[in-house]
Length: 274
Image (cartoon, rainbow, N blue to C red; front, side, top):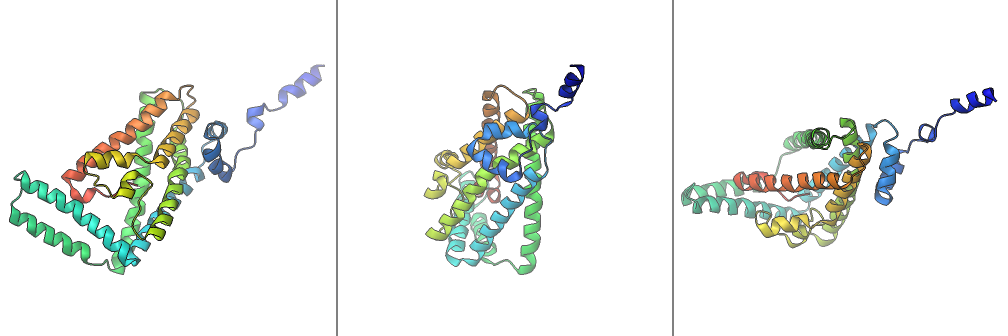
């Protein structure tokens, strides 16, 4: 009997013997059953592949959009016209506030039109994409750091910075799916569709309150942040989802407000959200 007891105690428990999910299983799981998927993920060490692959896919999609826009005259023209409208509106507002004269505004608008209309040389495109990839990773790590600090300091969660990277990376597959749909619609409609928000379909001015609100009426972004909230709650062993919903959506909205503010102060900073 003692020998039987010893043998039984040597067997691993259910959690330890459970087979770790593959990356593909995690990918499909966050679409179907995110709660159970992240619960299983929490029982294994964080994997670099779970956040690295989504970031690279995001970059590849951004690259494909830029390439298509550059090589499609109609879409490229519409994109540049939208840029000109946003910047011109901001410059005109500066004239109304007395910050610059009408002559200075006209000069800035002419220089801006000339700069935008000149096509980029091949020698400029490659360094631009390298810088874009660098800042994509910087932004990803920065946002993960913001989530981590709030979770550890405010929510008193139990986990690592790597857990935030995994939750953020895997939930990004929702927006990756959205980008694929947006690219497909761009090809079909022949006009730039940045995301599936109402603002994107109506070509709303994001500097206005109406455009700002419409930019947040995006079912895929909302879905993605719901999955992120669930992932963070599970990986940081929290029994309360509500506080993670509040944190994630609060940071999203606050980030949008700051983006809109800087977009008005620095016109070139504001671009279609997505």
